[in-house]
Amino acid sequence: MKRNTIFTFVATLAALALTSCGEQGASKKGAAVESQPAEVLTKTSPVEQLEVAETIDFTTTLLPYKKTFVTPQMALRIDEIRVDVGDHVKKDQLVATLDRNQYNQSAVQLRNAEQNLARMKSVYEAGGISKSQIDELETSVTVLRETVANLERNIELRSPIDGVVTGRYNEPGDLFAMAGNADGGIGVLQVMQINKLKAIVAISEKYYPQVYKGMKVKVTAEVYPDKVFDGEVNIVYPAINSATHTFNVEVIVPNGKEILRPGMFARTEFNMGNRQSLTVPDVAVQKQMGVNDRYVYVVKNGVAERRVVELGRQVGTRVEVLSGVKAGEEVAVTALSKIKDGTPVKVVE
Image 1 (tube, helix red, strand yellow):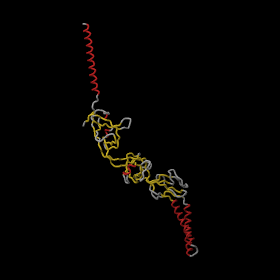
Image 2 (spheres, one colour):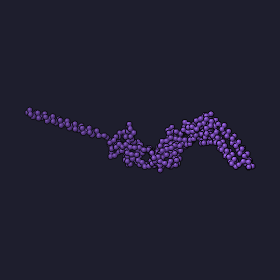
Image 3 (tube, helix red, strand yellow):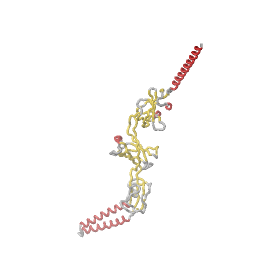
Image 4 (tube, one colour):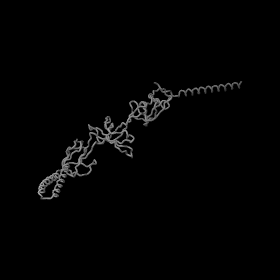
């Protein structure tokens, strides 16, 4: 009787243990089912190939269209300067005068020499002097005429171009010296033509076939970020720099209102033609926090796959993708905050 009681007690404990194990197993199965991520509902858009303008930006510095120093050809004392920095001048406008004493002396010598030559010609015709003496007198008059003409050009300094005075290096009473000034030139004044400017742009040699004289160029300056100036290629330099593998292009920039200034930093945009490129909706592109990586989610077989992409230009509401996706693939465009790499997704219309 006692043996049967012990047996019954052991059997009961075993049954309780089996029941407990069964419940724990069922609980674990339920937890496993609950831990599976639910599908995220999203809409997708295909990676499409579109024709995109290949526009390339190059940085440069604006230069005056023309620049000159108003310089006498000899050391003379400055008598008067008629313009100042910032004044606009016209071509051939008188801008400064120099001391006339040497000119006046040479002019008197020339008049005397011409009068003497006229008298001596009469003597020569009468046989009083030789032909060589007349030739010597004529040579002397010719030299004096050139001296007076040169002095006349130097005592009246005129601007060789239309422009604006950008440098004044002397004052009345100074003895002009043929020495360099602060702007690296020699002269009493500096004049720049700025109603149009130019820019020398270094472009990669691979674009040489696409660049030509008369090509339109968009120019922007940092100080006027909302303004676009219409430039034009004026010169395509024929040589390639062997060290940088670039070639220079001169771009002319109209500046009728003279709001641009030489020395300003600028960007030039060249349209090198159209090319076929892959594009995705710009809303599909995400930015990784803390870095500059851009990525999209490509949907394949109901699963989101994170792809890092290299972007090109904006094309309306789409953006050019240079690498990371293939034509025809589908990228998620909604519920992106709920999607991670490997998230199950269900595409909805």
